[in-house]
Image: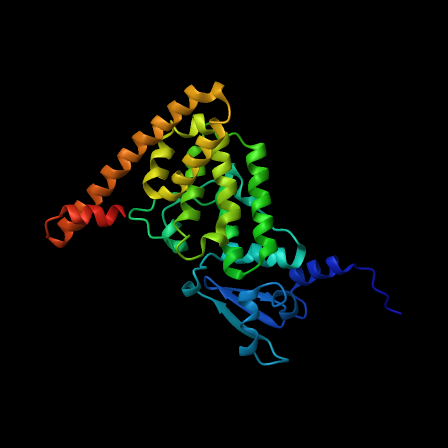
Length: 285
């Protein structure tokens, strides 16, 4: 008698670790991941659509390629880990493991920034923001929820006083990808980031990162301004603080207009055409 003692959750974890009975290879970023159709197709809407392309009863490969806006193998590996175990590991992305890498910019995730800044890709906040985007692309709602939970926990246990650049990286990564998705698709994480900015607005609005976010992510700043005004306006004792914060916003918006005008002039110079007032208006819109 060969009676088994493993639980279903243990069995799935063992399958992921050992790759036993694998009937699928998922190629991402040039790296092959052995998987099981019954596990991944039942959880990922994107991967499920590939089922009809496969022959039954044989080991076959599918590719998650750059045209789907998903290029990082680390995200795929952790997404698969989640599908097998119910969680994923962001501990290797801890703050002390940070590296700067200009190759991993928002543009790589589908963004369209003019000069993408160096991204701290091994920071936990950035990694979990990327996991949220990966979960949306793979169409795994529970993984999106898990990524948001990790980000909320990160904010609970981390002071951002000296790390607003990291926060700005996360905002930029999310908002430069928003044209790919609907606004509704990213609302859950957008609300978390805006709420954190409102909670620590005094430090945020005087940081250099605030100016950067204002230039690159005006939609975030517009939402932040509205929610901050509503929050501070509820208590008369906050009137002075509110006025100071709003003045910072006005100054940042002025810097944004100057930056946009300079960008239009640069584009016109590249085309060797004079920049007109109509160009400024069109770009600002």
